[in-house]
Image (tube, rainbow, N blue to C red; front, side):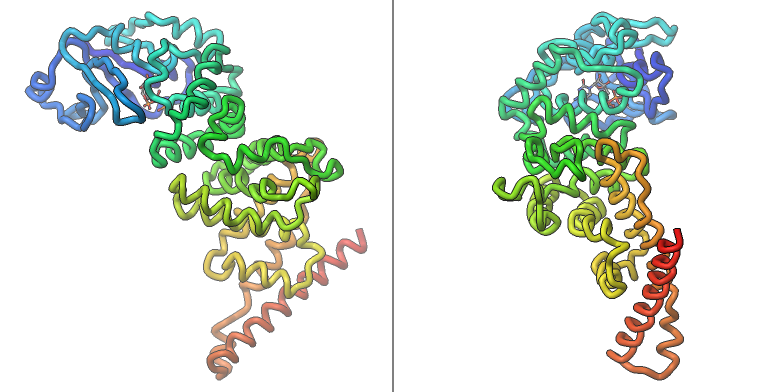
Length: 414
Ligand SMILES: Nc1ccn([C@@H]2O[C@H](COP(=O)(O)OP(=O)(O)OP(=O)(O)O)[C@@H](O)[C@H]2O)c(=O)n1
């Protein structure tokens, strides 16, 4: 039997990019031989084994043929006679279809090295279409390597377009779509993932609530970029500069879904989009089985982003209502995360990329003052039940009022 390092590990080694895991390919072996050598079988559908010591993955060379629709319809053939070239041919991109043997020799039958040097994401063969998730994978690799100058080959974009319009994406499970999207959102250029999905029609198939935003105008005074879809991409880009967190990036992506609900007669204004977006976003998150932390932050960003922008004009009582609404008291970190989305929302407009956002410091100061109110002292004063709640609210209001007075004074003297 012969062993090869394959896939992402080879690609990232040649790119000098940090690789997370190492996948090995075994040519000329059988499950029985692998088990006899102490490997542990883990693959349910494919012949994959864990090395007894390193626990790295070793897969037997295989060919695959799609049967029927969706992910589960695969006929997988593995036997001692499956060659390296055959196994590499069933893979998605040429840069993922290279192998390196234990002597360090590169095996590259499909031109992966040349594509890597020319920075091209190109599919290996028509077998690409056998797993529609690959449309999302290519967009994710683009989000990862765009800053290095990579682009997607025209013929691959065309294939992605055909797959997206064929209805095949509808057969992907929510788990696979979310897993791929979550990984993509954590890449260096997450907006590039959404942009490509939109370009090939995959966004309309998987997240129509977001795809709908393209073509919907905003007032040019506040949004020189005008289009709500372009704004969404810019906001996600800014969010990625501000935070590595998936929940923040997802919330930034979704904050404006309500604009898709505005009556075109009211364009370019979107009065009330913070509220009209909520049921739409909830449906989208439930369909995609978005984890609760991401879903909750996205719903709050949708509901409160406008109020955060107006923070400096709000009465202290309204600031407290905002704090109640986001449950600042039990989840203090939320305000910080929502403010990151709000900063991204402001800077995600052409010409506003460097804008200051004093609301961030003001609300941080107000929250700190409100949270510093000593509940124990109120309880110790002998008050009971509702009276404690009222006194607490009174003290918090006084604390926020003081912060507001200091801020107003500072702004007047500037
Ligand atoms: N739908 C898929 C999934 C995987 N692969 C192949 O399996 C390899 C390993 O897949 P995976 O670990 O998912 O991706 P990596 O390429 O290792 O990338 P990452 O760095 O994102 O893990 C890929 O390189 C590719 O050759 C594929 O062709 N089609």
